[in-house]
Length: 160
Ligand code: FES
Image 1 (cartoon, rainbow, N blue to C red):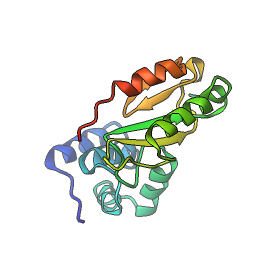
Image 2: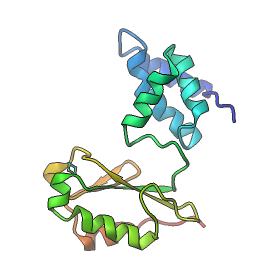
Image 3: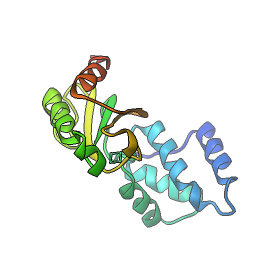
């Protein structure tokens, strides 16, 4: 399905490009805006980002596949990322990972059938000093225990 940025989002991307001497570094922001508008990064979103910034599709794809914040398929209303990298792992990251997997009955990059929840095992998210941590959409939750995770998950409201 064809994808075009809204005028408002094109303006936002133009603002981003002004922060740099060349347009290419705005690719991360442009992808983020594309994901926000489309729900995920489709090949059409990548094509549009490449066109708007005047860079190649390969350069865009390289960024999409490198960073865990970009998703190439539709994720749940609540996208839950669990860090299992060293600091988190040493402080119970895998227990939390298993806890969340079991609660929703989904695996890495799985989405519940009602589309409310999706799950992703991620590498370090930069909160090692407050490990273990998870992220739900853009919110970080740190210094977690299994009880705290249960409270966080219980606070997420399904829409259907
Ligand atoms: S290891 Fe989990 S945030 Fe760094």
